[in-house]
Image (cartoon, rainbow, N blue to C red; front, top):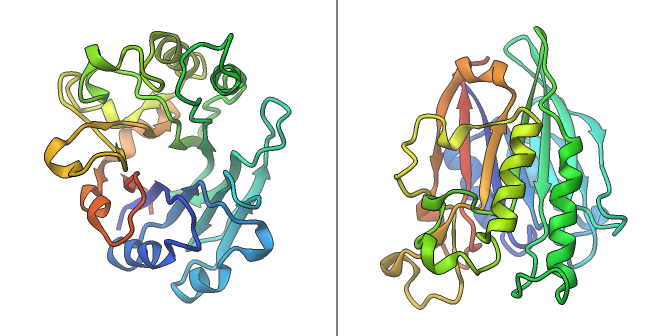
Length: 268
């Protein structure tokens, strides 16, 4: 069986725990990285995860906002809970897990959304987002013969033309503005990260992982964006077995506006 990592902005883990249970029962990823858990550590539903066989749990949460969690069916070692922009927000968690004879460092990120106005001079939320991405330059795709790195999460930027439903109409909309996309891609390349979701997918093919709650009929209008990402160090590329976007999850009962992405590797 391949080794798999899932990433999902769940938009409140306690509210949507039934959806998480469905994901785990139907897809059984080895590792699940959640974002926007909106849950302090002492209220995280650990018992529900352990009941499903996910006994290894790493969390970095706060009340009502943000929060990330990584759960697994195999042992995890917490590496770091890095603070960005001196905000005290819980937006990053890295762990180590063994797979295929390699020690994988898995970074789980929730990048700030940035508000509605794409001007850092008048919108402090957008300034925060740009500063956060700049600080992510310190996160590198470290690897050697016995180790590798993976970075996943809700990165809140759709970097490429066909990562959004309309490149032209969204150039001035937060998540796809040139200042975001250019800095984002520069940061990814500087860290030597490989964008696995675009590795074998033509640039002209649309990829979405998010559909707004504002749409009356999200499926028919299909105005999506690729805000959720899966990156790796270059030494994992030969073992990358593809990925799946669980689009149907956007239509589940009381869904998140993001859907899970599951990446698979030929590692045991």
